[in-house]
Length: 134
Image (cartoon, rainbow, N blue to C red):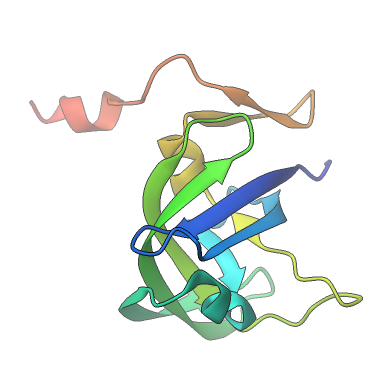
Protein backbone atom coordinates (compact mmCIF):
# COMPACT_ATOMS: atom_id res chain seq x y z
CA UNK A 1 0.00 0.00 0.00
CA UNK A 2 1.43 3.37 -0.99
CA UNK A 3 1.20 6.69 0.77
CA UNK A 4 -0.55 9.54 -0.99
CA UNK A 5 0.63 13.00 0.02
CA UNK A 6 -1.05 16.17 -1.23
CA UNK A 7 -0.38 19.87 -0.86
CA UNK A 8 -3.14 21.64 1.07
CA UNK A 9 -3.78 25.29 1.84
CA UNK A 10 -6.09 26.19 4.71
CA UNK A 11 -7.15 29.74 5.46
CA UNK A 12 -9.55 31.41 7.81
CA UNK A 13 -12.74 32.59 6.11
CA UNK A 14 -13.04 35.61 8.39
CA UNK A 15 -9.33 36.53 8.18
CA UNK A 16 -7.83 35.18 4.91
CA UNK A 17 -4.38 36.52 5.84
CA UNK A 18 -4.25 33.69 8.41
CA UNK A 19 -3.32 30.62 6.39
CA UNK A 20 -1.34 27.41 6.52
CA UNK A 21 0.16 25.50 3.60
CA UNK A 22 1.31 21.94 4.24
CA UNK A 23 1.74 18.48 2.81
CA UNK A 24 -0.88 16.11 4.19
CA UNK A 25 -1.41 12.36 4.11
CA UNK A 26 -4.61 11.18 2.42
CA UNK A 27 -6.37 8.98 4.98
CA UNK A 28 -9.78 7.62 3.97
CA UNK A 29 -10.17 6.30 7.52
CA UNK A 30 -10.22 9.88 8.82
CA UNK A 31 -13.28 12.08 8.46
CA UNK A 32 -11.94 15.66 8.58
CA UNK A 33 -8.90 17.63 7.63
CA UNK A 34 -6.82 16.95 10.76
CA UNK A 35 -4.22 19.51 11.77
CA UNK A 36 -1.96 19.79 14.82
CA UNK A 37 -3.28 21.97 17.63
CA UNK A 38 0.09 23.74 17.54
CA UNK A 39 -1.00 25.46 14.30
CA UNK A 40 -4.21 26.93 15.73
CA UNK A 41 -2.81 30.46 16.18
CA UNK A 42 -1.55 30.48 12.58
CA UNK A 43 -5.20 30.17 11.44
CA UNK A 44 -6.36 33.17 13.46
CA UNK A 45 -9.50 33.35 15.56
CA UNK A 46 -11.58 30.42 14.32
CA UNK A 47 -14.89 29.55 15.91
CA UNK A 48 -14.59 26.55 18.19
CA UNK A 49 -17.61 24.49 17.12
CA UNK A 50 -17.27 21.41 19.31
CA UNK A 51 -14.87 19.33 21.37
CA UNK A 52 -15.04 15.72 20.23
CA UNK A 53 -13.52 12.39 21.15
CA UNK A 54 -11.67 10.76 18.27
CA UNK A 55 -10.17 7.30 17.84
CA UNK A 56 -6.66 7.09 16.45
CA UNK A 57 -5.26 4.38 14.17
CA UNK A 58 -3.77 2.64 17.22
CA UNK A 59 -7.24 2.72 18.88
CA UNK A 60 -6.42 5.37 21.47
CA UNK A 61 -9.19 7.82 22.32
CA UNK A 62 -8.08 11.46 22.31
CA UNK A 63 -9.80 14.85 22.35
CA UNK A 64 -10.01 17.07 19.31
CA UNK A 65 -11.53 20.47 18.61
CA UNK A 66 -13.63 21.11 15.51
CA UNK A 67 -13.05 24.69 14.29
CA UNK A 68 -14.12 26.77 11.33
CA UNK A 69 -15.12 28.00 8.96
CA UNK A 70 -12.04 27.60 6.78
CA UNK A 71 -11.30 27.54 3.06
CA UNK A 72 -9.51 24.32 2.10
CA UNK A 73 -7.66 24.00 -1.21
CA UNK A 74 -6.31 20.55 -2.04
CA UNK A 75 -3.83 21.13 -4.86
CA UNK A 76 -5.42 20.39 -8.23
CA UNK A 77 -9.01 20.41 -6.96
CA UNK A 78 -11.65 23.05 -6.37
CA UNK A 79 -11.57 24.89 -3.04
CA UNK A 80 -14.18 24.03 -0.42
CA UNK A 81 -15.46 25.72 2.71
CA UNK A 82 -15.57 23.45 5.70
CA UNK A 83 -14.05 22.89 9.14
CA UNK A 84 -10.85 21.43 10.54
CA UNK A 85 -10.21 19.04 13.40
CA UNK A 86 -7.34 20.18 15.63
CA UNK A 87 -5.64 17.49 17.73
CA UNK A 88 -2.50 17.22 19.82
CA UNK A 89 0.13 15.66 17.56
CA UNK A 90 3.73 14.74 18.17
CA UNK A 91 5.92 15.72 15.24
CA UNK A 92 7.88 12.85 13.71
CA UNK A 93 11.48 14.00 13.23
CA UNK A 94 10.33 17.58 13.77
CA UNK A 95 7.57 17.42 11.13
CA UNK A 96 3.80 17.17 11.70
CA UNK A 97 1.73 14.88 9.48
CA UNK A 98 -1.73 16.39 8.87
CA UNK A 99 -4.44 14.14 7.45
CA UNK A 100 -6.96 14.71 4.64
CA UNK A 101 -10.09 12.71 5.42
CA UNK A 102 -12.98 11.44 3.33
CA UNK A 103 -15.32 14.41 3.91
CA UNK A 104 -12.81 16.80 2.36
CA UNK A 105 -12.10 14.37 -0.50
CA UNK A 106 -15.79 14.01 -1.34
CA UNK A 107 -16.44 17.76 -1.14
CA UNK A 108 -13.61 18.66 -3.51
CA UNK A 109 -14.49 15.77 -5.85
CA UNK A 110 -11.29 13.81 -5.30
CA UNK A 111 -11.03 10.03 -5.33
CA UNK A 112 -8.13 7.76 -4.50
CA UNK A 113 -6.51 6.02 -7.48
CA UNK A 114 -5.07 2.91 -5.81
CA UNK A 115 -3.01 1.87 -8.85
CA UNK A 116 -1.50 5.29 -9.54
CA UNK A 117 -1.13 6.21 -5.85
CA UNK A 118 -2.65 9.64 -6.41
CA UNK A 119 -5.90 11.56 -6.27
CA UNK A 120 -8.10 11.84 -9.35
CA UNK A 121 -11.12 14.03 -10.05
CA UNK A 122 -14.51 12.34 -9.84
CA UNK A 123 -16.86 13.03 -12.70
CA UNK A 124 -19.96 13.39 -10.55
CA UNK A 125 -20.96 14.12 -6.98
CA UNK A 126 -22.47 11.09 -5.24
CA UNK A 127 -26.19 11.38 -4.38
CA UNK A 128 -27.05 7.68 -4.40
CA UNK A 129 -27.74 7.42 -0.65
CA UNK A 130 -29.59 10.73 -0.47
CA UNK A 131 -32.01 9.79 -3.27
CA UNK A 132 -32.92 6.30 -1.96
CA UNK A 133 -35.44 7.72 0.46
CA UNK A 134 -37.16 9.90 -2.16
